[in-house]
Image: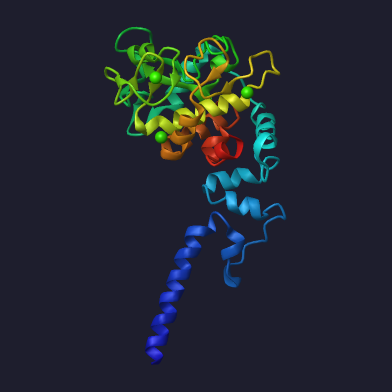
Length: 289
Ligand SMILES: [Ca+2]
Ligand SMILES: [Ca+2]
Ligand SMILES: [Ca+2]
């Protein structure tokens, strides 16, 4: 009987230790035992912070610092707060984007290569350029939608610039995003029709979070157009990008992975010093839209 109780206690102790180890990073105050008591966190670690911390340990770190003024907000108040937060940034020249993309989009399995967004192909960093077989700088928010070009501003914002195959980039053109179409040649499973482009499954969420970053970052107050998502395709040169209902689905289907999170961190640490809030908190897409 005693042996059984001891085994039970031991199992419970192991289970508790495992749970504690898994959750300690996110919510240290809830799991710290007296023997290993960590200092009490500041009062800022309220219920919304604890809830949001479930996303990732990295996001939790930024909730009490970078995002502290946005935590607990929703709707237009959240969008406005995030706009203020992410608008504090360093800006790059368009020529500096080449080397930045070699860092942000480096192939985790081959440091000499970058991963191309739509095709998923790993290609040598040195093959940047404008010819067949090269990779170039894709504006995921097409630069004609709001006509911001490539001068320093939205046209050089790394959060929506990605390496793509020259020919696949040309096929995407300035189309809005939506489901449907036929296979894009060498597109890695991407589809297109006359008025829209559907990226391969693995980057659908990435595309959604890039578009929605742009919508929050550019609100028309800094000499650039107010970029906004809508539910249309064929937006042409208007400062809109569709289709919002599909982008929201893609955000749910394809949550941020290690590559996308690392990219956000590299942009923050080494280049622009701002973050894509939807990579840290994908649930904020639904909180705003
Ligand atoms: Ca279409
Ligand atoms: Ca993805
Ligand atoms: Ca906007």
